[in-house]
Picture (cartoon, rainbow, N blue to C red):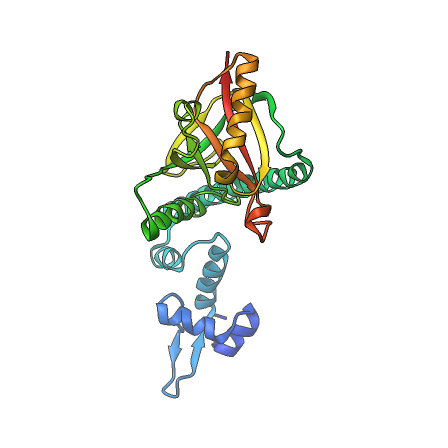
Length: 273
């Protein structure tokens, strides 16, 4: 059988791949015919089909054609072991990413249901678990395109680094500044990225503790003063003080709303006695 020749049409039909794919593999030097006639007809033997089997099988491991070609040309038991171990690591990463995506999806669905029912303009006081925020320094002197670029670069880095998650960009205010009435003196752009973030952005942990939280619709700057008055009044009545950075974050933004006045946001204030 090793001396029986097959045409490119035969190989295409047997393996269910197009002639164009076979010719592309040939162009890369990955899968060459046993011989090419003067009229351009290509012929393949059993040996070439063994090589094609290796190529098509290794493709299932999401290996690059370059890596497959390198293996086919220098193959051996040790090299196959290394190749498969690398592929296993890749699958482990994919499984982890799929799990993370699913967990973020479930969390997003849960929050969508929750935020449809949450009361607005009412203070909530209670324990919150720790959260992890990616930060980009806010520079109040930036204007125009420079300011826009800083915001979008924060967003773009998280799109690249974070598994499935609608990127909600909020603002952080130093707690001392907020307590003194500097209610729009932002220190950072911030995004809650979860505990499993593995990117390169600066991360700060918002610790487990007691927090005041309030949900509202519309733009923060237009409502900052009355919210500050309400927070200050509550703190004074309960004998509490601000214990860290204040976070202003959208929970429903352009992902679900067309008009900015319909955005749903929250302000979160850490407190202590």
